Image (cartoon, rainbow, N blue to C red; front, top):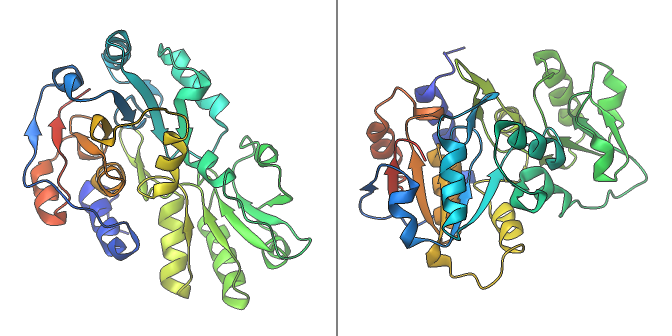
Length: 300
C-alpha cells in the first residue's frame, strides 16, 4: 500500500469526488496571519478539531488563546468534528484538559448528526457497529453488537454503523465485506474522513473503509458529518439569527472542511501549518482539486 501522506489522501478523496457535495468556489483565496485578522468579517466560527485545535493528543500552540480572543470579541465559536468514536462528553473533557473553555453545546459531532437521523430497522434485529470497547455505543439508544471476529455477528446484523477504526483490522473488514456481498444492508458512516492527522502519521478512518466497501460491492453509503449537510444543519439548529454570510468554517482539509462549508453556503478558511497539509505546498492541492478556500492561514 502507498504511504499514507497528504498526496495519497487527496488522491483517495478525488477518487470518490462524485459522492461528495458540489459547491461554487471563489476565484482566489485571501491570505491572512490568523483568525483575529479576519474576525470583523464573521460572527460565527465553526472550527474543525484535528489540525486546527489539536494534532493527535496535543493542543496546537496558541489555539487556546486565539479561541478565547474570539469569544472575548463576542464571537460564537463551535467545534465541528467528525470524531465519532466517543460521545461529545468525552470530547469536551479532552478540550477542557487542553485549556479550551468550551461547553457541551459548543461541540457538534458527526456522531450526533448520525444519532439525530438514525432510521428504524425493518425487523427486530440489531446494528453491527465498528467501534472500540470505550465507544459507549449504548448512548445511541439502539440494539447493537460490536463487530469483532465472529462471522455470525456480521451475517445476522440488520445494518451496520461505522464509528471508529481504532481497533479495526483487515480481517474484520473482510468479514464485513463478505457478509455484505451475501446480503446488502444499510451502512451508516459516522465519520466520513478518509484519514486523520495523528502527529507523525495519518490514520485510516471509517470513511476509508466505507468507500472500500462501496467500491468493491457497489453499495449505497449513508454519511454523517463533514462535508455533508447534516452536521451543518445540526450546528445551525443551535444558533439563532443566522446570517450565512457572517459564518465561516475553519479546517485543515479541502474535501471535508472547505468543500463542506462552501456547499452549505458559508465562507471557508484553510489552515495549512498543521494537520493534513503541514509540510506540503498546499497550493498544488488547491490547483489539482479546484477546491478553493475563501481564506488561507498558517494557524488560527
